[in-house]
Structures are given as structure tokens and as C-alpha cells.
Image (cartoon, rainbow, N blue to C red; front, side, top):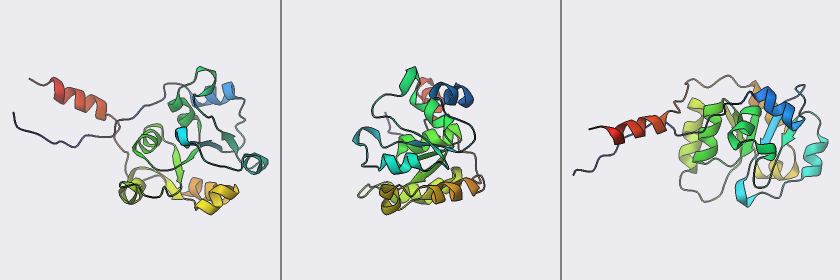
Length: 170
């Protein structure tokens, strides 16, 4: 059997929950942008007191599991902005749920340059320096990101269905 390589759309989890309902469950007001800080199992030494003291935005954060039985994609969909390091999972989920991405560099990561080059085509995104991230100086970058126009393309996120269809072909 010959080996075949095929490009497929992004594989991503989409929330099926109303973002307003998720915000209500989390006790988040709708009068300011909502930011999901997502740094995975490794976390990040973020200055939570400074971040939460800035009342220009609300923050969702969690260490391991999403709160109150919510799924991670529900939190992404409920946020206006995710702040994270770019990787396949978070980029695809932001695209799938229409959430902007405020990203910081991630050091040695082979795919980083490709993500930075390709994300703006399908995702509102913006770089925040490590210094601003770790100082809690997020508000200006969040405001600038939210002021950006929509990306020029709607990224497809039906890769799982496309791949399954190919696998099941006769």
C-alpha cells in the first residue's frame, strides 16, 4: 500500500454552550472584555494580583480542569481573548470558537515561526512581550487586539470529519 499525505482542515473542539451562559455560570459581567489566561499544565508565573486589579477586563483562569463541569472549549468560546503561547490546540480552538489570541513567545518551539506567519490569515492575534505578560501589563495589548479587524479568511475546523471520511473510504 502506498503512503499518502493529505492536508486537512484544523481539528478543533467547538463549544456547544452559549458563551453568555458560561459567563453567567462563572459570575462574569458583560460590561468589559473577558480574557482566558491559558498556559496549560506548565502554568506561568503571572502576577495575578496586578492582573485582577486592572478592572478594564475580566479574567478566567484555572490550573487543571475547567470549573463547574464546563469544558475547556466553553471557556475559550466565552472569552473575547485568550492569552497563551501559540500551539496547535489553542490556535485551532480559538479559530473554531471565534476568539482572539494574545500570544507570547514560547522559546524553542519548531512550529513557532510558522504559527506567527499563518495565524493572522484565520485568527485575530497579537504578540505581547514576555516583559508585559509577566508584569501584568495586558490592557493596552488586549484593547489593540480587540480593535483589529476580523481575519481575512474563515478557517475551516472540520478536519476530524474530513480525516474520518478519508479513513472510511473504500
